[in-house]
Image (cartoon, rainbow, N blue to C red; front, side, top):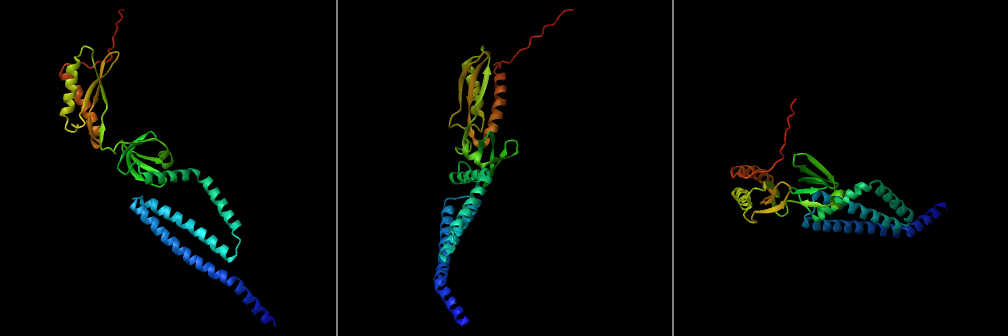
Length: 270
């Protein structure tokens, strides 16, 4: 008699939970297949969009686990497990983790934006957050620059993506902005000719756009000239330093004075 009751209970359980278990297994198999296909499609889109490899892996893993958790909740609900409290626990845990990692999440979001919109790439010379350097590495949370004095600069991506970024490499050429002052006794036309000859004789100064020399201002003790040569980005500092040195030599040779403060020494007689 007891055996018959156990058989009846077992049969009732099978009839009650059997379809649910079968449905849950089917949902798990189909859901896993859909997730796999979805991730494959997302990866293909990211590859075509030239997304950074580290970003691809991170996002694919994140999407994979989010979809897996959703699938697990659906499967448990199909079997008959109460999933409302389970979902609430996951949401609360996610909120707590988000608050604890608020800064890191901001940097991650900034890294994602940088890798998607690509305001710069590795090898570009940029200025951002008060720093200037060549982009060495773009990571999920930070971007590393090599400074002009060969120092490593690490900038959080959150700050980097929210601030102004000046990319000196994008256009391929740069204008060198220099100012030279000469005395008021100097002939303006002759001075412009001397300055322009320095620019046109330099092999790294571009002919197009053409270099320019103009009177910038009549200062208190000098006539200031704006000297504006163009060059390839890689030659910027070479042109900057060469033109500065050669301009001094050319002005001296032409007898054009560069004014400087004079000190008057008064000797007291004892």
